[in-house]
Image 1 (tube, rainbow, N blue to C red):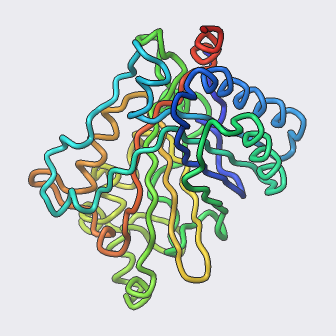
Image 2 (image 1 turned 60 degrees about the vertical axis):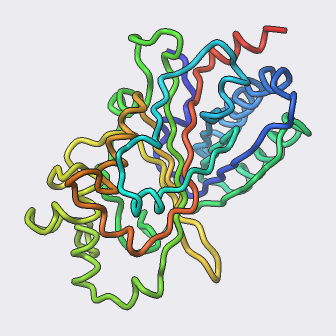
Length: 307
């Protein structure tokens, strides 16, 4: 199976996330250039092996038919989730044509790779946003808590993130849901430790789940489908904090073998039907959300050869 290694990479110290739009009429050149970006990531990964460099390129839902006409992964329309109007207002739709994720344990290698990508893509893309992520303390978010998702490794990461042989055209590809949020830190810090833990569903000190009765309606319980203590994850998560003096937030990048996973997860989080919504949404603002597909290497290579 040929796939982009960054889709199943483990956590790193530094991350770079690029949201880009394509120049009009640039699709022919981009078909040839995107495989060059993937190859460049692989070359630098080998050259600087100690940096644990990884990355991937993904194509946005709205740009896919332009870049690769006549093909179509099984995208799910996230606008038809059956959410209440109040919930819809909290879930932005911010499409981008292209998304690039880069992670490593050396910031300078990330910078070097970004410059190489700029030279390859040249004037065929416009960078809408560039986010620099980082590891905070022992892998916590900027609210001070560990991730609500159980860490997985090895073959399990491939099974969760990569399209399997049942869809041969896209085997090794992955559906990507990118979301960016900013924390209402001042409001959060006014809460007591007990209130924070009740909302988050975990003990702040060590990440243990709260008793089941408290866990189910918490942030962690809702995100995990109320499976106590984390249960089985739905996707491979690449979450990293970002921020500055006047803002703090998190970029969340989820990789899944099936796009329907995201629809179900969003219904859980935003409380579709009779479900309880994620209580943490009162303390965060989602200001970006977009779907992509990261095609497998053989798919991009085949399209690069077309006129």
